[in-house]
Image 1 (tube, rainbow, N blue to C red):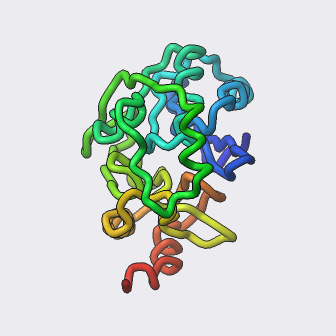
Image 2: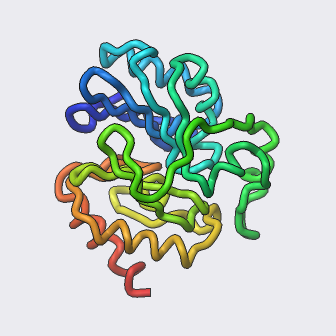
Length: 224
């Protein structure tokens, strides 16, 4: 675990170079994304390192339903008693009621991984404009129908709509994205915001003038 900025901790999931985050405000915590299955203990250990107990967690917010972000949600809910939040458009997939909407180009192993997916019944369904612990929910469909970002004017948790690879901000990976055209529109939506810190679904966070860097790195994508 590492502290990104005051009150925000990153838990790196090395198998996917993905991120789970712990946001601490007023002695209470929110977990943003949970990694692949089997990562609950690593996240619980990060809470302990931050001086918090499992019972301090009020919410587990999923930026989207994909297994590498929701895989440990069920276990974390059992360990903390926290409520699980997901956008209403992703709820059917999180609950296993519908097959995941991957494109035809999706790697076979991505589809096969869902044989091991344990459905999660969310406690709260989110909509655009909702707020969780001072973080505003922004609906950014495309990567999945119910992808969301969380934003407070300085911090942006972008899920997989913005990622960082080799130091550059990138859009969502097309081979895992349900609707690429819609996802690019959502990238534009996020880049209309001003944010100092970018907390991506995969890759290293960007601290300091992050929205400016994102605009620069994604200039070619935005021209398309």
